[in-house]
Image (cartoon, rainbow, N blue to C red):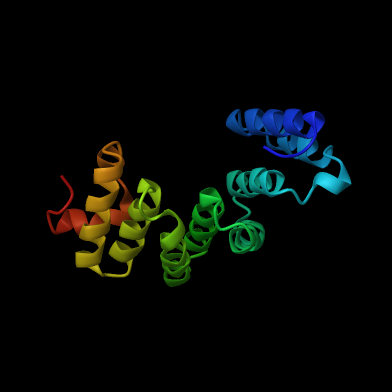
Length: 163
């Protein structure tokens, strides 16, 4: 993690507050970070987490999109960007974001494939959704539990494809 010790402490506190649902406190910690460190990638990533937690989808799209383009190695920037687009009902765009992230994270990211399965299912591309879900399960079998109830995968479940 880059930045001063103070910045690191404030980011840890902000994440802790987010975990507790204390959004104003998390925002205050982020605002307390020195101006010259506000644009550090990991500070911006915590800001994305705050926007997502507060359901500020449009803000999340802007910040996460800029971050993913400038620092493609940050998987959570891509995931957050796509998720915010999906919440705005812009599913095709969300899918395109994760397809663009695939060269960077496709071999190791179960959540990328799981979310692509969801988007494909919503778009009616069930064969692609099945393939993506299989990849997600292969990387992290814990996604099987979520898949059984995820409303985005209803079309796959209706087809008998989620076990």
